[in-house]
Length: 448
Ligand SMILES: [Zn+2]
Image 1 (cartoon, rainbow, N blue to C red):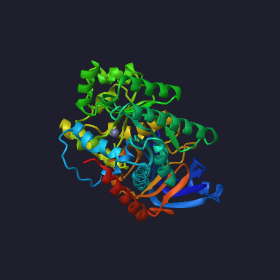
Image 2: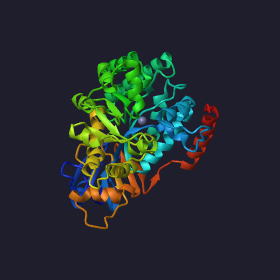
Image 3: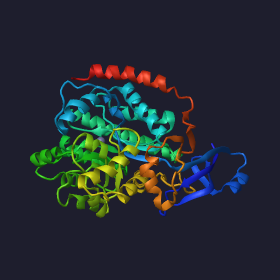
Image 4: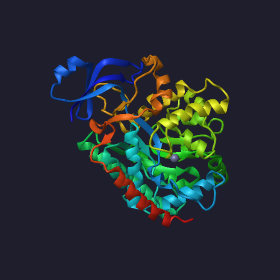
């Protein structure tokens, strides 16, 4: 579909944080075709579908750099035993929930979050999936949910040895199959919405052989690995006890790190481990809401950025929207350091510049900027600035206004997915009802 969006303030998210007024944006096919004066573009493209933004803010869609769609059915689940620490949270909740998922519940877990993403202006998600009793084809099910609306996704299956060698091997096969499927699709359709990478749970649930096999697949498919790293000190303690070395050293030795790999969390880094992440150019993703929820500590985002690590922001399954994590990141570091000026430009960089950069580096997809030739992932936000807004103070408006402003329109890959807060043809109530049925069945299978 070709669209012309006019009567908007445009935050382009270029290096200068340019804010344009009295300009329009033209979407041609999957890409941004032109940006220029409204009257000129209207004259040039008289037959395109007009969208009048009524003075709203038009900006690039947001990226969530670490998510778990599969966690949806934890919502409202009552545990018999209250976990007292991170390892118990994994054992009592997440490893029991993922074991209870079948292909249908995987689809509905994802679909509920996909709808939420579109409604909240998130247009690309990097997901990390686990379902040890429904591994084969699980990534296709996640993809099916994304495809129903047209959300962009970079998917992987989280391998682990916690359920035995065979399931780990199945997980590796699923990752490789899915990566190759996406690569094949891109041959005929370069702007195909989906990509794959190799997922791994965390080093303390993986044997050396599994780490090496994952790295081999990543190398063979020219992809990276996506793994939880030092989210809690238990990762370091078990790794040290069993393998006699630090987590980062072990991952480096097995070939898991690298410029296309994501290390999520990186909270409990020992001295020199941040340097190793920087040297290997490994991407790190910070997940502040989840870290606070699990009471696992705070990543030193300042050290990581200082050392040149490409650091992004994720929600780790807390929600599909990334904006609550933007606000949390801003508050967490200030509060923890008792330093009112900590974490301003850093959080801005992580969300607006680094998240799209991570997505581009890992998939080759040109997103995150309103620029001719870029993929048309755009959101129209109900934000009419109540105080003067220019490019240089945009972040102040984002952090204290846009962060919770409703999203009116979402365009992904040039497709108008949501307009005037309506997603065409979507029976949200019916989907939720079906999801509840799936959740009931999952809760029945849940090993309390
Ligand atoms: Zn995670």
